[in-house]
Length: 491
Ligand SMILES: [Zn+2]
Image 1 (cartoon, rainbow, N blue to C red):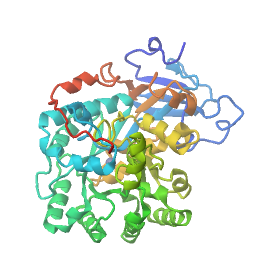
Image 2 (cartoon, protein in one colour):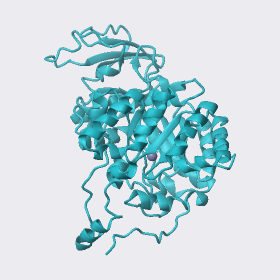
Image 3 (cartoon, rainbow, N blue to C red):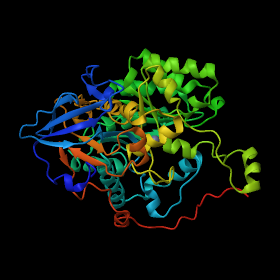
């Protein structure tokens, strides 16, 4: 019988128990394990440990070669099943999540989605936001996420109250404390900083949020006025805000003059901001020729920037071919054109240079992406496929756990990391864990959902929390509408 069969797990786990013969990513163990006998490659038990959980925390980590001294302590024999720290999802858009449930249709192109989004926030009611965001948080909790960062669409930086979604998030952060640790980041285009008064209002609003300050998040896209980048750093320094950029979400090097990321990297290095600056998307890195690509990655590595790869949205939106006459003519023959270039960060090359890499869910079921479910394991599976990540669960788990947690801890300008910092598999850490019956990356990512169990502070989630919410729950609080702006392929 599978060690995960429900009959083998009591609803309420004892206060003290062993998770014996668990396979964990060795790089996440703290301190690093002794090389023998844990790493004996020939052994079927290679990489296995036994974890002692006591009163909600990890109280011991033993190489599997050391027999568990169980005494009267309950032992759950995982027989090589996978144990990961609970997930941290550093890049989501919960205010936009599940917009498709309102009846609108998704876009297939970034420019089209961005243009259509402009009308959206003014239409949102508090009831709808609470419904969609609450649904997202329940979903994330069930998948095993204990902390996440969401961007907040910020249409009017002159409003000292911030957008409605910002105020709803503050309430939900209080309500969800202890279950999902919620972080916020503004989202608006860089050109808004040209208005100094508006920029100051925005920074003050982010800094004085009663439930923990937000990060200053800006969009730097093709043609962005880079002269305002230094102002972002000045605001961040003055108001003690973390900096976070959606940058160069396209595949056209000439449009960016390769200047955006490079300029950002230089500024971060000159001002000593290093790892406090987050750089999401940067798809254009994958479209550079080798020399430019190498030079830019070296520059990023020297700066300390963290790169965030969002495979779901970038694969969906890049090279849709919607906006060039060449592609329209080609597409007209068949009605549709298949994307050929992919919008991925160069993950291997970045990691080889020591650049911190994080994977995020980004959008889910909204104008920008019609799929997704805020599941970091699903994101890891997609990245593994798209970027050929070898042994993704055991070699890249940090991208959705520890490295992501460090990013959020840096964003927490209050200096209190809260639960976001306690992610390592270390003695003394809170036993927030995700268990999966698969014993290898192939088995885990082949069936990412089946048999997953989430432990929080050493206990299973309550039955209602352990499964993602039913989609019909979205019908309450959402006004369904007919969308007449369906994006059609030119014919
Ligand atoms: Zn995003």
